[in-house]
Every structure is written in C-alpha cells, then in structure tokens.
Length: 358
Image (cartoon, rainbow, N blue to C red; front, side, top):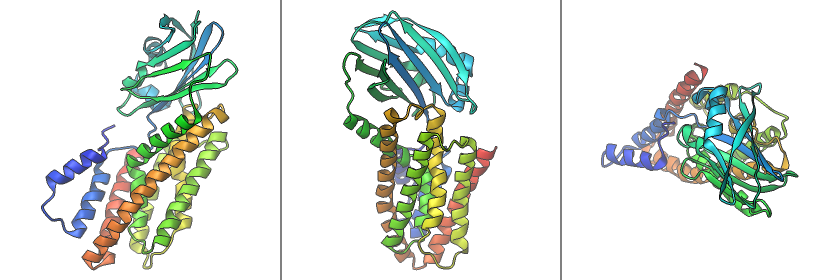
C-alpha cells in the first residue's frame, strides 16, 4: 500500500545524501523515511481460504477482513468475484462451483461459502486469482483439509504464486515446511512494519547498556506471545481500528517520555504493556479473518509467524543499537541526539495517530 521497501529506501538514501552526513543528519534521514512512509504496518493484507475435501464434493470458505471486502465493493462483489476467481481442478479436470451463502460478522468481515460438486480424484489444485485484486503484498492463507478436518496442505498465496496443490488421498504438507514458511512471513512482516520499528527505535535510542536492550526486546517478545495466544484461543478480540489508534499513540508517548526523562534506564514494564497492544495489531487482524477458529491446525503457523517477527526484531536491534551508540559518540551530546530522534518519533507517531482516527 505504497510501502517503501528496504531496497528502495537504500536507493533513495544513496541518491539524495551528500558525501558525508553529519551524525544527527544520518539519524534524521533514517527516521524521516520511516515517518514519511504512508504505511499501516498492521494492515494484515491477508485473506483465508479453507477447503474440506469430501467423497464427491469440496466445500470452501473464503474469509476477508472488512477493509479488504470493502476495497472490492462489499459482500455482493465478493460473491461474484469468488465464483469467478477461485477455481479448483481434480486430476486436471475443472470442477464448477456454486455459492452457498455469504455473511458478515460483528467486525464487518465477510465469509463466503462455496461448494464444488462432482469432485472426485486424487490431485487437487486450488487457484485463487482473487489475491491479485487487493493491495500489493496481499496474501491468502489456503488450508486444504480432509473430511475429518485433518490438515493436508497449508500454503500462503500471493499475486505471483496463487496455486496450492494437494494429494487428497495422502497428506503432502509437513510441519517443518509450515514452520519455515510462516517464520519467513513473520520476518518480512516486521521488516516492513514501520510503526513497530519506530516504536522500538524510540525506546532503544536512549539505552546505554546491552542489558537494557535485552530487557526491552525480551519484554516485547513475551508481550507479543501472550497476545497471540489469547487471540488464537478467542479470549481477547479487540477491534482493529481501536488497536491501530493505540499503537500510534504508543509511539507518540515514547517520544514524549524521551524528552522529559532525565535518566534513561530499562523500561521493560512500559515496553511489555505497549507490546501487548502492538501484538494485538496483527493478532486481532488474523482473528478477524477467521484464522484460529479451528484451534490446533493453525496454532503452529501462528506461533511460527510470531517467532519470525521476533527474529526480525532482534536482527534490526543488533544493527541499529551500535549505530545509535556510534552516532552518539561522534556527536558528543547524547541529549541532543536523543532529543532530535525523539522529535521525529513524535512527528511520525502523530501523523499515524491522526490518519487512523480520521
């Protein structure tokens, strides 16, 4: 949705910067790029397509978040598009589908139920061209299950790779493949989650010891895990609109606190509290898509996704923290560096806050 990738950000920086940037200027450029990216990092860009293979039919449930359904024209448009753009083949024979029902839940999410009758064979191919109708980067979680609910294959589709294949007579997916796939997705999510990263940058720019860095990252990791578990089991279900506003507010708060605190030390309690909210940002969104309603079959993908998020987060911290310390040493004034960076954090957070409220 207009996101600036890390590669593109590098090209912009190389084209626009002088031969040598002042330390404060380098920090300003990095954080200004974060602030200028018009990105809702927690917009999941995910839909879910769950298929159950019976003796002579395949039942499918397509679940869309309210924002995604609205972007293509609402429930009636989803009805038409689902019939046109979701196709299945059994042993290379196309199987015609029909719409059984379409409904909305209390969050505005849309759920379309389709049935493909006269389906018999062993090699099932599911093709979803619908994923290409949404914003760039949208993904669709396709789960193919046997009649008894046993998971056969689970795959994440996108506009470039929109097919899933399963041998419906014998499971083809492995737990290891699922873990690796969703872990990689989590890493990509955090590397493009600019509000996540800016929140952490606001915390880490003022730390002085690796022990404080470790406590900050650990608190954020635990908070993410708790929220994900609660959302997966259905204990917590907070509207994503509220969560997104709170996430932006947390960024503003951290920037303001940096300006008023005279001594900076570990703020793991603050990090844990806001980490719960940040975790809800994508956990609640996944719940709105229907992911997690079947319990165990999706628990491994969700936890693997969370592990990927944390691995990406740790990798970013190991790069930016030494950079902050180096820039601080060169500038000769920790206060000015932290203040300038915190002002940029406040500006970016305020922009997201106003955008999400409006």
